[in-house]
Length: 125
Image (cartoon, rainbow, N blue to C red; front, top):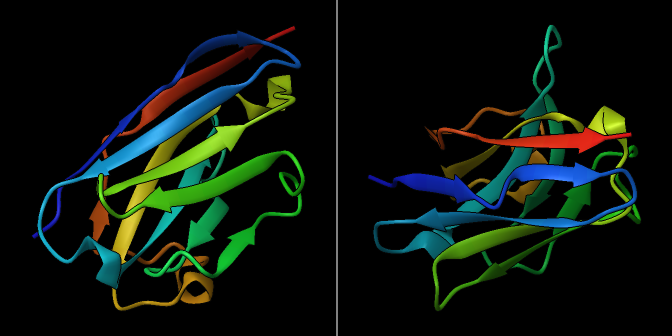
């Protein structure tokens, strides 16, 4: 059983930066691929970025490549999403998700065993 808790969301001006954190409880978190997804008002949830259990493989949505960076700290059981040059269209609730022994590529579709409660990111003009 894994519990995921996101933090780091908030209000930021366009062009600013935020770093989201996804802290996991439970053992063997390094066996889980972890992803970030977001859902804007009246829109479907969409993939943002994923990272493999080892941290060696990452995938990004085309819309955030070069702008967002996903990383993980195994000692802290935490996955981060560094978001730079934020745009108003980045306003959404951001969720982290984890799936046991799935690859980073496999998690892109959003099928995961565990999800966090989400953290709101609002980018103002």
